[in-house]
Length: 369
Image 1 (tube, helix red, strand yellow):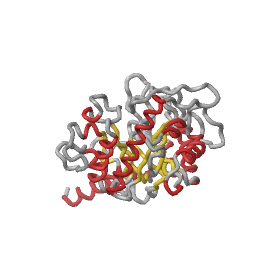
Image 2 (image 1 turned 90 degrees about the vertical axis):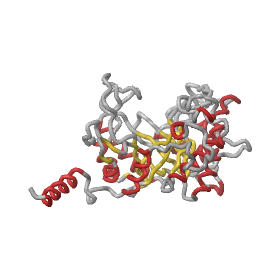
Image 3 (image 1 turned 45 degrees about the vertical axis):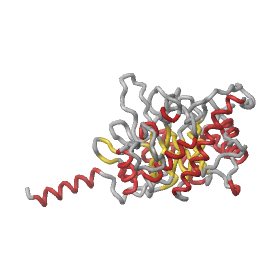
Image 4 (image 1 turned 90 degrees about the horizontal axis):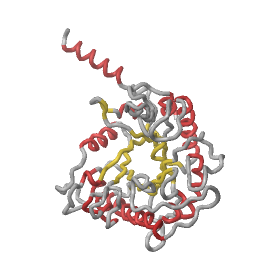
């Protein structure tokens, strides 16, 4: 077989294996996706492009990147920093497909928080801001920055003192100790806003980053996320992960005291307008970073699951809501693939694709949306 013929056959095989440009959905900022950079050595960004995802979401761990204190913390070339090679590939892969990147920055090094585990906030909120500034200089094409993930959850962020919630009725005001967590976070968020805007005015800062519930409820977090001067921290977008077992419908009643799920996003917007008023009267849009409905069987993460067709139907309804309501900046699906089998049968089937790569009905719903 001639060399030219071999090359022609190889080119045809690659063309058949990857989604074609003609069939790919147009990238939409309203659609975000979590997933691997590569799988079995193959870039996954052509798949994200086929889905029409306008945003790729991933993380940056401060502790792993800065094992020792840097001499020049805002300089990405400081020898104390070890930037993850996979993140370099992610940023390059997204740029090649004209997909934006969101970086969720979390995890405090022991040298910055008195030797505690990475969930504990730094002793000086400015240390986090200096690191995120270095990251913004390292990745100048990234303009979406998420300050921590689900800080209302004790396993994710500390210090947190859980609030007491009634079964019915109104939430009680937080006491002094309970207010400490949201106020420390507010200082980290505002310092990061200032640092990121100095690198580029294009940088958008995603703050709050609550989820449906938590040791501190989304309602209380929004109310008490205040700076020492009593003002709310600055941010461009408010992040929330509104996991729910309910069909999407804003007309449904509130899930309950201390909960804000997908159907309560209008209530969430009202709370932000009341307690998190931004300079010049800017209303915060909602950055839905993580959403999925587990399918097929009971799982280790949620106490519910739905069929694949129901998940696809509800995803379609959510994306239609995002298109029709300007307060929603994006909807992020977590994630591309189902979790691999874990031997117990309790793995979480959360993907648009099965673990083996077969398209589920939600794949088409996401692409169409």
